[in-house]
Length: 153
Image 1 (cartoon, rainbow, N blue to C red):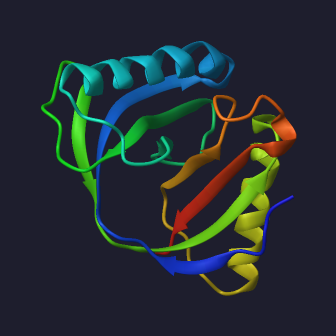
Image 2: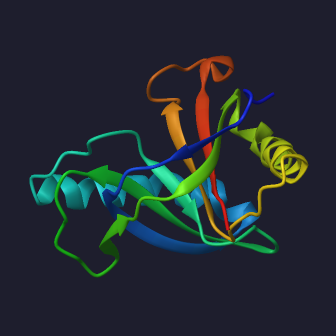
């Protein structure tokens, strides 16, 4: 289900983010409009994303998801009512690639969790998914690739 995880060090990264808190049942309703909102702000400011969009989850989902829809950018954006600039610091993460439909992601994260524990890596509280190949790139869910990143504590 996932590729063999690796421990990697990331580079600092500027991003534009929209913070959302919602129930699991609302994810399908908020994701598309949220992506469009961030893209609209980037276009209005004449800024192009410099890589695939990602979701930054502030903690493990329980009853609700507390996350940010993010797009990497080369330069900081000007904040709006709902879209904020940010910068990821360099950090060490456990990283893997999940292949398949997004409905399998709830099973992919526990696989990464198990690998990290077996390897003796302590986990941070937040994590992020970067959508390398998504429905906009290929309509076949079997071809979708999601990069999973879990910072080490």
